Image 1 (cartoon, helix red, strand yellow):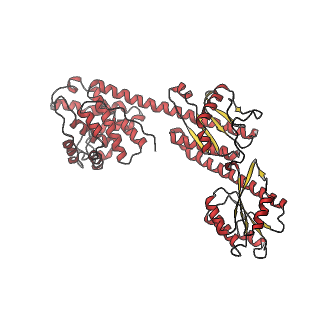
Image 2 (tube, rainbow, N blue to C red):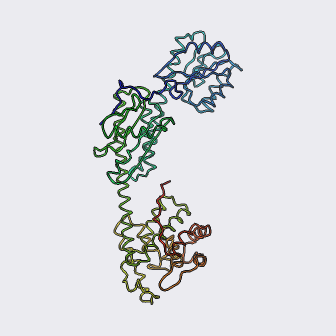
Image 3 (cartoon, rainbow, N blue to C red):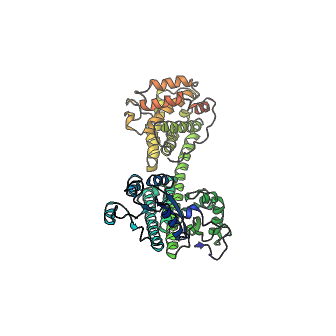
Length: 522
């Protein structure tokens, strides 16, 4: 299904052709007022590729530098050589190419004193695109020179935009199969840049999913946007989104879209899940439309990858929750405890320089640290008094049980490390294997600290809760023996800053914390 505006239909919102965004800019640098006036007259009414011409003037090389500082989108410059000095124009060329590093602008030297700047010497030694003697630069020759220069500028911009788009696509490509919102946005922004460059479009387009359609597939509302150029099109985003949604769902272009606006649906399993919308400055060729259709297929594939990624991620989260629930049914105090451990773990991981995305995974893995308690007899697990040595040895086996449960799935390898080894010590005197805890994952060492702290400040049938300050001091005393000292340092920093207060309050008042919020990846 392809949708394109009928050119014969009226344009409900007219884009003024005088818009600065749709004009070419020509810089004329000359110290002769008559030459400036003559240039304006000879180029009056000039148009190329459906765009008018804006002429910006400077009467010296010094003034030209000031103009260049204000206009970074000049396409062509006509530069006199002899102005405030005999080589002022040539120095200006060097400034544009070398200091500003502007290789796109087309530079035409024109001089009334060719003896001071011989043509062959200037062409050989300066990065210019044309050389004209003022005596031969008739109105027709001026028109031809400017038109040729603008065409070269446009083509170079097209190549450069395509290069930028390809770079973004290639940069995003390795992440497409472990996709995040950021990599998908980067991918879409790249293909959009390619469309603009290859089809010579105005720099105003966007790609967006249709709100609600994906939700009907998997009950998730995903929005992916890539915008480029004009703020005006972004101001109309809500209106265009509604109209494009109607277009791809009904197959009919609604009234309200601008003349020549082009809409292509993104289809997944033959169902529309989004669209590409562009506003070209002129009608697109069949080749352009074919290219955009191919790009649309790639965008749809990327959206499908995102949907599969989210399905997999949700399945992982549900598996974590189900296993944690199993442990909670065995011990009614476990449910609140594992949510608190999750919160502690995420905050501590972030403090230690872990990314938000990775910290979220740490928190999820921490929820399964006591999953092995499902194999401990209820009489021991729920005993209202202290355990005797034999009973304590039985409880210790929850680490082996937890590791045995989780080791069967590679996606749970980190959680398995936590469940198996969170009672190991920094000095190697812990259990079940008696190995130094520096051999294990960072999240395991984090859980070792926060598990003990939360147990100390929580009420148990056999003990009263500790004062949080005393519990924090106990953690500090264990640094370098029981706990990883770097983890303890970060823990105490957060504790003293009050970052754990809401978690501590929940433990003291036996209230539930909300599920941790998954931060967007950096």
